[in-house]
Image (cartoon, rainbow, N blue to C red):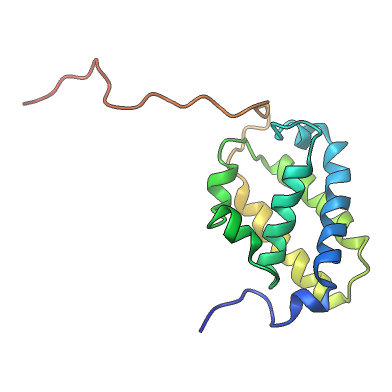
Length: 156
């Protein structure tokens, strides 16, 4: 028995691949124009890779093909977003663009609610910084030091 976070058949009921393609394209139209969010994308405004990753993740989550897992393994969303300071303001901006994208789909109310509820929970779970003054890095952060502190004394 496997657990599914959405009702059986949900992916097909909302329109399958084409619906998720439209959702993600519309979402990234907003992101590309949002200075707070676009700064978190190392590729800048070249968003095709990000679109593919989000679309395949959402398709899998909502009951579609397992392409995301086959290509990238377990989603580990918090780990994948950890290098970027996701503040409440960034969460709100992300949700604003995702809500606009959802509204553009003209989904039945129950399907719209199921998707919107998930996006709100997921976006809130990604918040990892409450320092609104922290700018997003333009690229992957440098790794920190590894190993024991050389200045530390050992007892034995």
